[in-house]
Length: 566
Image 1 (cartoon, rainbow, N blue to C red):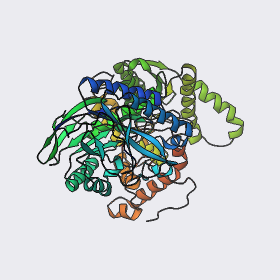
Image 2: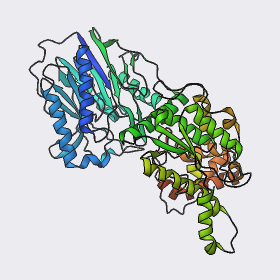
Image 3: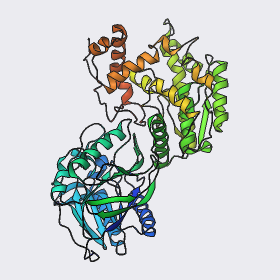
Image 4: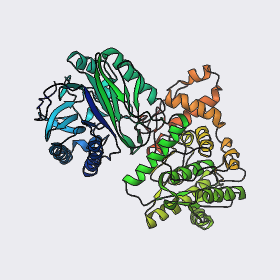
């Protein structure tokens, strides 16, 4: 066992044949110890009313997850410990609680789960397998615990592996060999497209190996780039699905377990629908934006509505996240802005019900051009002047943000982030980007989806909010006459296929050419991807939905002379 267990005075004298376990799928905030404690108390009150014996929370529910280097702060560690001890003192009349918190023991900091029962901290277990890949970096802040034994709880032996502890066989094998009767797994597992299948595969493998039922409890909500989807579930020992909570929604639900001749079985539990596929991507983007705005206490958001598909989708996501009264859209026209764009932007704003203003930028652009004229004398106009338009727009939006406090939503997609098809200090200005991890072809797909469906928690109107004409027209930045994106980039269907293989798959140029892509196109895209790293380092954070996003997952050097020549 990883620490000394203390038996509370209310431990039953004989093993029970029935157990009510409540699942707390809640939305904690990193660093908000008091707020997280309030969430735990609210969940406990719900569980108590329904007669639960035990209430299980997600990983590091007291501190919020992931706390990153904040957890190294002694004052923060102390605040978390005080909260745990305060909560423990309130468990005299039940239910017992399994909570997650950073926990200092023998001078070492652990990612721990604590059983609070009978008015005290009755048992502590430490996470053994600390992930250190992708978005995870736990080895730099936590010490791994020893192999754990089961936690004794009122005559039952609970195996409590923590999140990554079930992705390999060793921890669960140890728990099974030392007498665990069921597995309860607190998790901080963020959303990505393949994650449901990956979680299920890991859980099924551990159930098969151990012969024990498994309860998987995950948190929900946005934390910077990460979005946690909840979707907590349970498997009985025969691998059948015993419980499913919904995705992207908070829930506290009680499950009934019965001791049968061959072990424990969950016999009563909710079976909700899970949000999957494009719907899950869209819901993740909305929830990530919502929680970034809410948890950082912005009164609302402002964004430039250009008449293009990216800003239209971002506006729809913002309204779904916050409601129309907290979204301010601004059209920023210049001489190259088409009548069609003006009409389309106004139509989107009208359908979404947001405040919509028009601020022409000619005065700003031409004023800067006049100021620079002596320096630029004798040189032809080029991308410099085009970028001035974007930078004036960025300045206007940031000024509105400064004056009224609303956060600027930036609207660049992953295709643009990959190739550098964006202007620093212009259209890249902003605090958060809900579509940062969506390729352009996916932006089109999710726009069509939103016209047919919206998440159950969305605050925006149902029905068609993005006109079909806007979705169908050729993308353009409208920085010069008759400009189209595909004047500068390959067709998005080709571009995104190549980028997906380069970014998510780390494919080589030679592999892509062998797959049938044109050699010069592949080499050009690979070059654009590499030289745009300096821009990505200065980009706003945004929701992660793919297997490998820019920032937490893919961290390349800016100064980098390697080029894959195929």
